[in-house]
Amino acid sequence: MAKSKTDPKPLKPATRLITAARDFSEHGIVSPAVYHASTVLYPTYEALKERKQPYQYGRRGTPTSRAVETAIATLENGYASKVSPSGLAAITTTLLAFLKPGDHLLMTDSVYAPVRVFCDNLLKNWGVVTEYYDPLLGGAISAFIRPSTRIVYCESPGSQTMEMQDIPAIAAVAHKAGALVVVDNTWSGGRYFNVFAHGGDISVHAATKYIVGHSDAMMGAITCSEATWPRFKEGYETMGQFAGPDDMYLTLRGLRTIDVRLERHMKSALLIAEWLKGRADVEEVIYPALPGSRGHEIWKRDFTGASGLFSVVLKAQTEAALSQFLDGLELFSMGYSWGGFESLCVPFKPHRSAKPWAREGTCLRFHIGLEDPDDLIADLTSGFERLKIAT
Ligand SMILES: *Cc1c(COP(=O)(O)O)cnc(C)c1O
Image 1: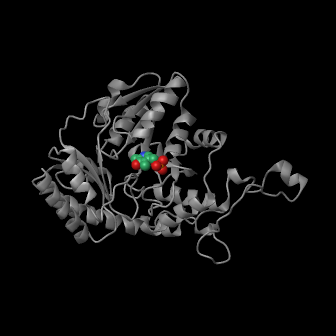
Image 2: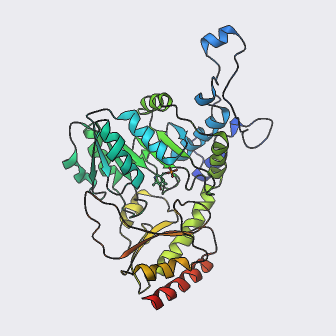
Image 3: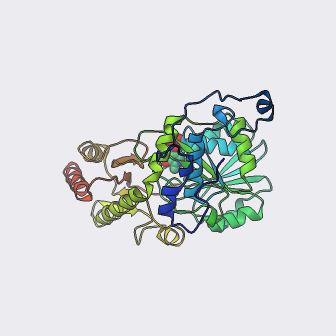
């Protein structure tokens, strides 16, 4: 494989996103080709025996997969990356690659809910013990470490309840006990939080969200430190992981513009979060980038920016009033996922087992898209008027 142009580090992150993996392109065409491949031919018997050629079989890598993986490793400042068919697959593949029966997994209580289902069913059946911990523990997580603790899993901020985790403090404790730290870095887009510089060993992503950025493809990404790469890669290959070529291409295409998109998401989200904060019907805005929000101190210390996803706790509402608010919105749509160009708003009920979510109010999660924020505020203003009439 050709050496990537990403290697000289002095380039700033925005520039590196543009130059990363460009040497996979051919014929002067700016983007690499989309290779649909299963069979890769060997010219001679000798070549077949030696398997020395860079590409050997579709699942083992194509110029398309290598380009997107190289670009993601560049984005994350990691050693190397792999992609998977979804963010959930990225997470499960990582956990399965490192855990064995008898191991103890410390899982943040704020984790993306389908991961909880995976741990409580499949991992449990295979003899792995998952223990959920309060995401705000920081270094006090030491009380939960056992000799069998293999992984401490973090998601910061939690994608619904937005707890900011003290990853450096958690990593210091985990490493002392010989455990690995896996971080779901989806919220930062990979652009605004460097997992490896803050003590993490593996970064996992729902690239489906900001990296793809257009709500038109599913993709997961896993980036490893040098030390964790061989074991991860072996597990990934053994489990037959790969991803479709067209979706890999869309991922690389999205990644080229993530810097400008995130900047706009953040600018509009800050404006709207600030506007929401002042409203009588809003109990709390939880957006770590917003001064005064819970988690703001850690965000300021560890992150270089914010995405457009945040949550709001409304004063307790009836279901009927909530329907009036949500169903009449014209620019905010209801739907899971986030990170695309469009604004979204979904109600949610936090799932907790380590520590109860002791709040009465109705929780809403907003994704602020790339629309003009004035139009978004007008849409919300009408929503709050409907809410008031219905209450
Ligand atoms: C969406 C999401 C995932 C899962 O990604 P998919 O591509 O939908 O499988 C994982 N983690 C977080 C934080 C997410 O928001």
